[in-house]
Length: 107
Image 1 (cartoon, helix red, strand yellow):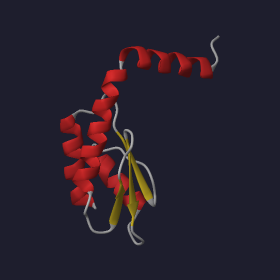
Image 2 (cartoon, rainbow, N blue to C red):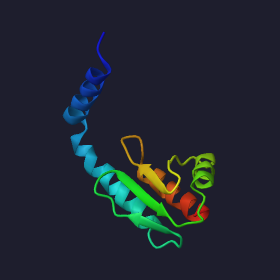
Image 3 (cartoon, helix red, strand yellow):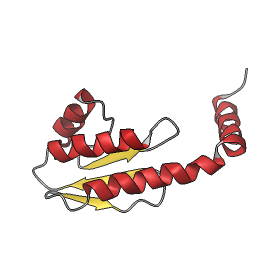
């Protein structure tokens, strides 16, 4: 049986061989997401270097409630004081725009 690390290495090798050019799309989607949220009161968006966007919540913002409300509208994120949002192969530009709309309403 292949160990878990071997499975992860195989997945990473496949991604590098078949999806490396797509990483630029993921990074662009992350920038679009960050730009769409930037400037909202009560949050600080960390400019992304990769496909991960971090959103720092001001004191008093309820991260648990935000994550729950976002999930109910089809947007997955994690965090209590700092939200973490990730773009990837299965996240389209339309998905990013939906996430921006939802999070702007919630935040």
